[in-house]
Length: 555
Image (cartoon, rainbow, N blue to C red):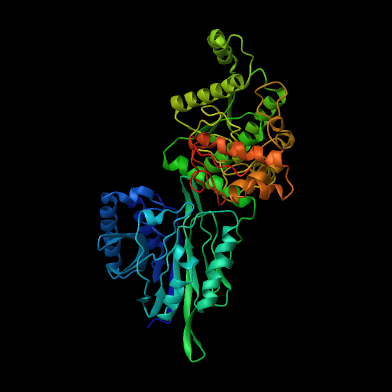
């Protein structure tokens, strides 16, 4: 019976579907942590999370089983055991689970009991729940192995405690959301530890997967609610936790030696790190050589350029200024200043020849009609086509730069400024864009590859936003001021409030009703928008799934 255990926590990134690479990464950790008794890896570390409908391919299930057997065979060398997340078939049912690999074999498996089916999670589509799990005996310690959602409800931990669990090890694939780290620790993990009197290891993955960013931020809490270990966020990390069996009253309990407690990124650095992480992994995993984006001299494109540089390095970011007759000298200067501060390539491609060509081409059918939004959108679509041409010719992925405020109300041109392969700002309201731009101009993210100093001229942040598609245009000509617009949208989108409820909070009824109407009619645009990183609880696409065609209004 061991009196001391070293449990190594491997907070790793994953590549969905690349089983060989994921297995190799686990074996590399094991080779460096041969002093450990047990190495723990995040939820579904072998196949990557979330696998979505990839999990329905029988070939993936078969290869996962074969790869897990190979990993198990490695443990015959007498070195550390491994706790590995994967998928399992039992009695014809598919389960999300973990396997204890020890002594050259799969010594035990446990399956997820609580299957999340909300927001980004769709597990009931793919898996069946396992039975309430029993503890696993490992070197004299009774390990309770709840998986992710299992600790967000009390039943699994209570059941494990009743059956004699002494240490909870909870593996996770928990996506980043604003303020979620506090909820995980204080609202969930500490509560389970205190309720049961059992210490809890919470191990999360890190990295980006399409529209989801995982922040890591793994930790260990004691039965009194004390934070014994806090791993860093937004970075891979491998940390040893040392456990001793100590006398308590007439019995014994396992206690973790105090470890390093890292400071987590504060707001808004956490949002910025989510954007950087998601873009970096999206570009690299899809094997793009870099990115290209339009740099207009406005705040959205400036902060997207900064995010791209922090994610990929300046040498992989190509910016393009595409002036028209309405582009101000101020915008030209600001774009040039931003590119210089970031150290990126900047090319200028004037769009007037194409604008004039379209005007001539359409003149016969437009005869008798005054210029209107059509001519404004043509400029945007010419810019979108120009950037896509550069992407096609040279290979970089086009980054689009529209924020959530614009996407909510349709203040964007489909097949124009909505063109692109990925949008870092898709779930960021305009007020959030201002906040992260102000922050990035005075600080550098811990995971960033960009410059230490400012990344854009201060004037970009302070000047009134404008699309510059007609003379003296301002966003405020078409939309409420952004603090008002974002407050209304937060009510409508994030909290599903009615017009009456938002008006009761002090907002003008006509304004709220207009915003709700714009939100509803812009759904068709959002369906055709590129993916972008999830930041809040109701991002478009994964969380908020509305029909394009419907007649319900709350006004």
